[in-house]
Length: 149
Image 1 (cartoon, rainbow, N blue to C red):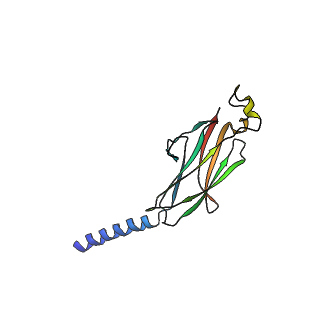
Image 2: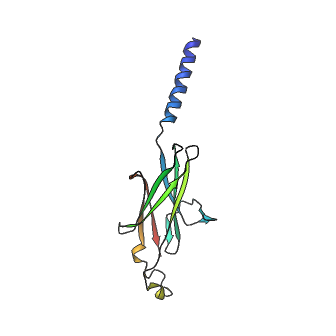
Image 3: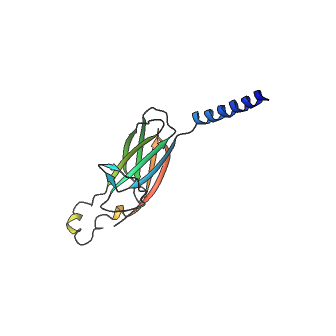
C-alpha cells in the first residue's frame, strides 16, 4: 500500500514538473500615459489625449532565460502602420517587462492654429488604435486604445 502511495506522489510530482517545463510563453499588452522616472506605470489606460506620450507595456511570463527580440506595431485609426518599435526583453526567472512609447505630433503648420483648437492637425490620430506585439515575426499579443482630442 505504501508503495502505491509513493508511486502516486511521484506521478503527481512528475506531471506538475512536466507541465511547468512545457508551459508556453505568455505575453500581455497594456497601455498608460503615466510614468515614474521614465518607467511607465501600468494603469491599463484605454483613452488618451492627443498630447499624451502613450506607453505600450509588455508583460511576459514562462520564458526561457534567453533574451527575446520583440517588435511593437502601432496601427493608426486608418489601419496603417504608424510606427514599428523594436523592444529587447531580458527574462529573469522566466518573467520580463518592457515598453515602447509613441508621441503624436501635429502636421506641419498646424501648430499655428492649435491655440484655437487642440485637435487641429491631429485628425489622422483621433480614433481607435490597434497595437500588435510580434516575436519572431509572429503576432503573440494585441490590444487597443483610443485617442481623443
